[in-house]
Length: 190
Image 1 (spheres, rainbow, N blue to C red):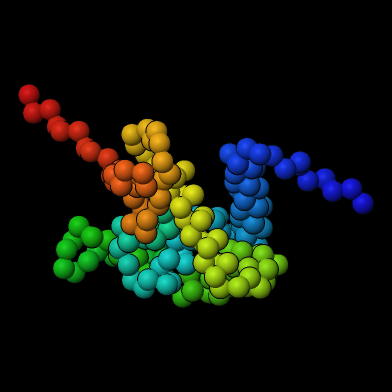
Image 2: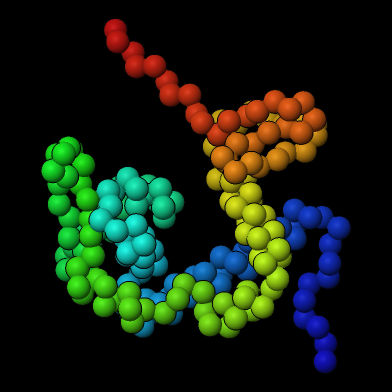
């Protein structure tokens, strides 16, 4: 039987791009499977899971947990609230803060929902030694940080980049930190 895998390449960037594409395709396929079986989009599923794991929680906390922008999370919450899967209410201590909590229907929807990883992928993942799982998780986290780094990051010339736990990119050659934080422009008061 002939192996249909592409020939290995010496270019790690090409290999990286192919791997990221395969992951994106798998996520897309799994997202459609979940949508067909539950009627929930992947972002809706993620937001429901975040609320379940975090409890009654603010919109900003959900945003951080699911790595989505506030307008996206608000739109997702609007749809979930329209389906009576979540309810929102204002904080009693700060009226500007809006909290969300699952309804009984939201809890039931998650109880019947399949996992985000397919059963086969989850079984293969769990067969890996803990150290391998940790290394893969760390590598994917570092890759996500690199891919989502702001365009304003100064170009890197020499040395290697390290991604630390606080999502900062550091040059190992000079030890100079290049923070992901962008400097906000000052408002023109004229």
